[in-house]
Length: 117
Image (cartoon, rainbow, N blue to C red):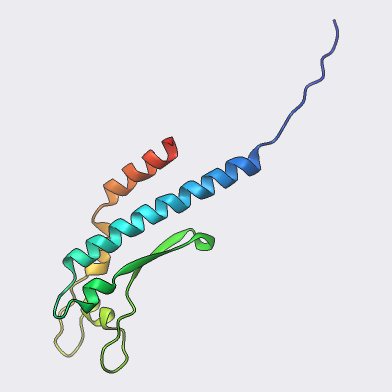
């Protein structure tokens, strides 16, 4: 019986690259949803805070940040006061937290769909 040569090829680089692309797509989808959800429940006076809520995917950290950079007259991040409240009587609204956590079951479904593609 003759021995046949076996050639083994590694495709780990291609698999890793594809998984990284899927992760970015997943984080982008979550970011869009979370920012939209946070904006939908954000406190509104002028609409500046609500309209400034956005997301940023950071691939090197494998995460997505939800937030805003709107500042009040004193240069302080306005969203922090609205999110957590202040000792001056502003009650915390937790709109960013709500945006990030309200659709956890949906985020699982999004991940499953992306992985199936």
